[in-house]
Amino acid sequence: MPVADRILTTHVGSLPRPLALVELMLARQAGRPVDEAAYAAAVGKAVEDVVARQVALGIDVVSDGEESKTSFVAYVNERLGGFEPETGQEARRTSFDGSREHLSFPEFYARHAQGRAPGSRPPHLRCTGPITYIGRALVETDIANLKAALAKTKGAAAFIPAVAPASIENWQRNTYYKSDEEYLFAIADAMAVEYRAIVDAGFLLQVDDPSIVSHYTKMPDLDHAGMRKWAELRVAALNHALKGIPEEKVRHHTCYGINMGPRVHDLELKHIVEVILRIRAGAYSFEAANPRHEHEWRLWEEVKLPEGKALIPGVISHTTVLVEHPELIAERLMRYAKVVGRERVIAGGDCGFASHPSTEPEVHPSIVWAKFEAMVEGARLASKQLWA
Image 1 (tube, rainbow, N blue to C red):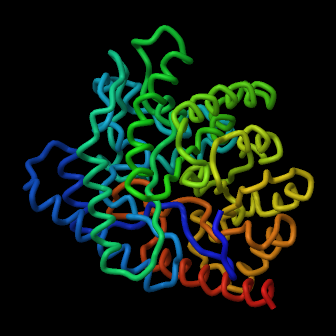
Image 2 (image 1 turned 45 degrees about the vertical axis):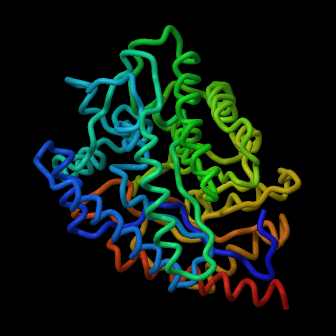
C-alpha cells in the first residue's frame, strides 16, 4: 500500500493504440504477411509514447497501455500451449449471448453485435492437451519495452496487467481435462509463470479478473449463493497462482466488461465483496463511477477493509463519452477516503479503454486522455481538502 501525502492516480491498463499499430495487429490476426521487425518497432514506439503521455498528465502509477496485446484475455492465445483453434458456433459466441442482459434487451444487443467491426475480435481456442506456459519471450519483451519507456521518464511507478485464470477458463473451452477444477488449476499453474516474471522484473502485477463478477450476468440460472460458490473456487485458483508473491506487489481488478449497455443485471458488489477480499492482493480495483455502482461506496461502511490493503475505485467511466468534472471526481474520492482512510485510496478507472485493437474504439482516444486529465485534477482537489 502506498504511503503518500496525497491521493495517487492510476488506471486499469489498456489504452488506445496508434492506428498504424492497430492495422498491423489486425493484419497479423487475419494471417496476412507482416514485417515482424517493423511490428516489434511499432509496439516499442507505442509503449514509449503512451507511457510518456501518462507521465506528462501526472498519472502516478502507469502501464504499458497493453499496446502489444490482442485483448486483455485473448493475448494468451500466443502464451499458453495445449490449445487449438475453435470452430463453428463456439468460435462465434460473444460475451452477451444468452446473458441476463441479452435476454432482457435483445434488440439492443442485436444491434450491438451488428456494429462490431468484422475481423476485429481474436479467435477462441479450445484446450486439447496439457497446458504449458510458452510465452516467456513475449512477456520479457513487454517488460523490456516498459523498462525502456520508463527510463525516459522521472520517477513513475508502473504495473503490467495479466489475465486471471477464471477469465481464461471462460475464453477457452476445455475438451481435455476431466473436471473444471483440474482445468482451472492447470491454467493457474501456467499463468503463475507470467505473474512471477512481472513481479521479478520490479513491476506491480495487476490481475484482470472481470469474470469474478460478470459470470453472474452470463448465467441467468445462477443465484447469488451459486455465484459465490463458483467464485470461491476461482479465487482459490488465483491464490494458487499468486503463491509466493508478496501481496503488496499485486492489485486485483474486476469489472463488468466493455458493456456500454443497460447493465441492469450487474452483480452487486455486496453479494461478492467478501469473496474478493480473500484474494492475495494489496489493492482492489473495481467499478465505482458507473451509475449502476456509484452508490456502492457505502458498502465499505459495513465491510472492513483488511489492514494493509487499499482500494482503487473507478472515478472515471469507460461506458460514457462524457468527461467527468474534476469536482465530482474529488467528491467520489473523498467518500472512500472518509470511510477507509485517505492513505488507502488510489484514484483509478472503471475499466480499460482499449480492450482490443480497433480502428473504431468505443471511446475516442482524445476523450480518454481528457478523462485522465480530469482524474488527475480531481485527485489534486480531493488531496487539498483531505490533507488540509
